[in-house]
Length: 225
Image (tube, rainbow, N blue to C red; front, side, top):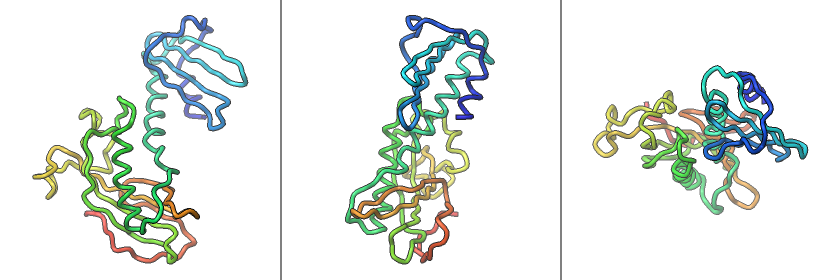
């Protein structure tokens, strides 16, 4: 909430009529309970609509740091939230821990390919090169897995968002088959549910921190150095 408050504070706002709200591109974000939503339209001026407690108010920007400043902030937040929406999802039951990690690695690529156009994390091509278990609890109910993938960002100019988690395949032994793509290492923590399905608890870049106060056993998977 503080992030959005700071973004909105970057403009001076004056009341506007609902008929003034433009058509076209916009970002709408809602609270988890659905009681409050904010919608921002880009441009100069920008428009901001707030719906909360059954009331709707619309404003237009009177002074901004730069055109579409608030929209850019909201869109960046939306892109991250959409990318991370796979966390909390469950996958097919009756899979071994190794199969669950492999299934998630494939599902992650399908998720990135289905992101909203313009999302800098979207990909047009994705291949899982290898996957496996880094560690798991002794009872196998929680698994720390890892996978290596080759990905082609939908927008080549947005490769910077992958910095810190990917390198160009030209600098690896995957160059011949996946030249021009990015090579990324991902970690995932999966938990087996009562119905046998595997639920994603977290996904991150490279080696991840995993839950403490549990006894873990080595799974054998190592990340590329």
